[in-house]
Image (cartoon, rainbow, N blue to C red; front, side, top):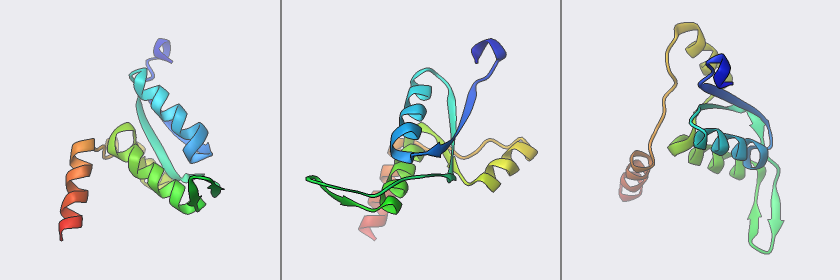
Length: 107
């Protein structure tokens, strides 16, 4: 990809918390920017000795974590608009995400 001047990857597919998550983290560690299309991915529910999580909860929490550090998380239509306009998608930081959560909890 570097030989072709590719600096950003877009991740879609199945499963959010497994293949998608490992691809995003690996790409970031290799120096790529990552875009994650939250409506073009999905999860499955789990129940085990650690507890239960619905597919929706797993997907939601993973996308929040990705947006806080690893990827720009957006819907497909938003991504297409960014491509059309040349606008970079919103990215966040761990600290900014955490500070908003703390402020929300204090309210």
